[in-house]
Image 1 (spheres, rainbow over the protein chains, first blue to last red):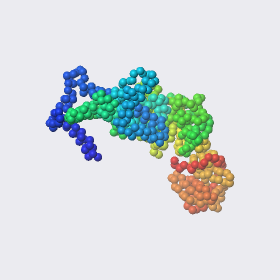
Image 2: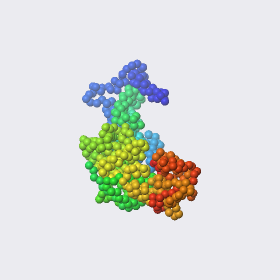
Image 3: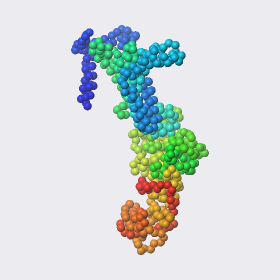
Image 4: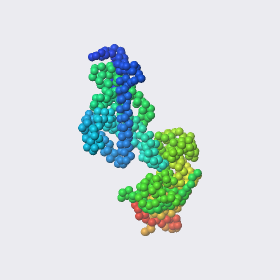
Length: 277
Length: 344
């Protein structure tokens, strides 16, 4: 167990960190200590202050997409999990409906993403439909290859990752607690805020970690749904790799890792996951 | 601090699909009394309590708290409060926040609701544990917190669903005494669901024995124990022999049964049989007898009575009793349920 962990997780991480501190030229890595990977990444950032340099803008954009996706997946995931846990009475139906949620996973990520294109395109179903209904004269340009389509696809892809842990937390809530709250005069909303959400917190945090780590590092969805026009943290790493600038790519990976760890440790401060599992 | 109210159930019925859990029961419980709903599992006692609490809707019939018909009101508007089986304390809230929960829902500010909650924690002697989480408390302490939480709304009737079943036997006796004391001090009605006849006898002013969704018999514990009206009651309450003579059935308390050797003078009705078991029980000795008709009966003798005669297994005996102390029984139309263990 420890060996597998060391071999497939720690070792690559150590390599990436080491490589991030190597020197490089146009076509190869030079195994000598240098922080060029990092300094190149933040090139001009100080000079441009108070304006934002490319790298900071990119990270802010990634963070914005991440927060939007996180908020929406949490909202939808919580609602679905709540419905499954509290409104579906029979165990059988709970299982059937949970399995139903997994059906999209029978096809690959890419196909699920691309399926949006004929729907959202300039001459896609949505635009045609709206035009046909006389609601718009011109096709909506922001439907596809925009932040909207990126967030839409991300939410579509990753909501399930919030449904499962939240459902798992909720199913463990003793139904008598809900009755006890009702007995004490709590309204449905008060019960949700005072009982259900606090007790579902571990699930909410675990789901959040899934979504945040995936979205922060994502470059495929943002690339495809953004029409390769939206820069993201993952995209920087990809383009550095394509340019064979491995130390620079590694440096970016380390920065991304650092930011993600910061977000997650902030989240785990809210809930002690180890205690709750 | 609190006022109390009478409870009246009128033709109260609960059906789950085709199954009738509670079958048109009528019941009046005077204000300020300790009432135990007693019966085997599935007899409808919990459904009845949950309907009174408002956690189960009545299929038909009415529930009156004092002069008010509460049948269709939500739990918080009934002037009742419920203490749940295994307490249902909110695991993420401290003891004081658990107790103050109902006040928080009413929008009362923190300082005020905590002051109120402290008073109730003092009442149940738990003020030292205000900051703890429920998981850090013992079973008995959790029960006290649950009591305080239920009492904070100043209910006129407190409903308790098997409040002692989660406790070990020693603690059960202690909390039983505390419940009774609390009820006496507060002067409000307690309605307590239990399947333990000893619990009901020790606590209740009124015992309501239920069977198959109906009330089998109600009355003071003494009335029920000394004058069971049906075979079910006699068997469920324990300590009785059900004896059939001709077409008539009687219940005779085990400790009222006298034993005689064959040939000794017998004054009154009697049954012949063979001693099948002799059990020493400390304060009394139980002599089990297989009557000649095949019925199992038993007699409880004091050690003085037993030592005078010292019956042995296999010996022939005559069991006799004073006819004035035998209660004639109606045969219960409902299915007979095996009598619960004596110590349950």
